[in-house]
Length: 364
Image 1 (spheres, helix red, strand yellow):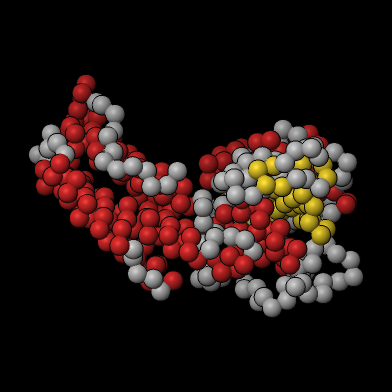
Image 2 (cartoon, rainbow, N blue to C red):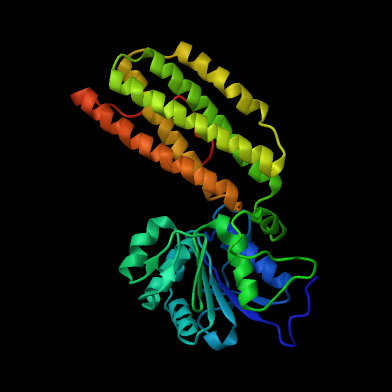
């Protein structure tokens, strides 16, 4: 049920194209409609049905960017995912966003949605955030990039990723002077609040999904912690052994962070699969070659698997506190990967072979 938010409903447009990120449309759309706003999905043509990145939802547009004008709305939202590549190629969509920014309408963009803002050539001197992989594009367009969940500069609100969406949407509601009956919105600066609870109510990650993601990460880190400990027992190269021991210590820290989040944030214990992952690693090590080159290849492959799995988990959750931990783990693993591969090339000379992970990817 929505509360009374004035005589005229606030009008909000969300630009959509194929492969939009599921939560970046679902969360703001649901929250705005609960607050009594009229939300219009704008596509490039009416006879398309646009599917989300993970294929969980699809929408038919209610209008197109061609016939609509900025003054028809109070706010405009650009989702993330792969959709911005298509949106920025539509001159009518770019023109609509340009008009909105020029007329001081509220414009919100998430992740790669900022690439559409780049096309408007109105980012000079603007403070923004966005997906880290496009930070150079934003800086080259004259923006001041800030790695923060949500950045507000005038009428432009930007966010980085799905984990930021509950805060982003709260900021939208505040700026539009909208509220939802029975829902108390926290201060957007509160980084200790369990934002996933708001997100879940608006169609974001469920408690069950977040707990599962944490257990997936714990299982991966526990397995590789023991695997790298076993590798360190078998190698002869002292520099390699020291690096393996450093990685093992780092992974012990990762496991503590993840398990504390699982317990303190959700009052949950780790799954039996996670508990058994260390024993599985020991068993695997007994069956694998002890040749030093093979250990190099397994170590690099295992680290790469962890980097990519963690990256995917970060993009699937609307829980900022959990994703902050996962992002730290991803950065650490990427650093380990770089150091391992540098040392591998130094030690192997012309015998370099591709990585050989000892496990399958847990997240795709």
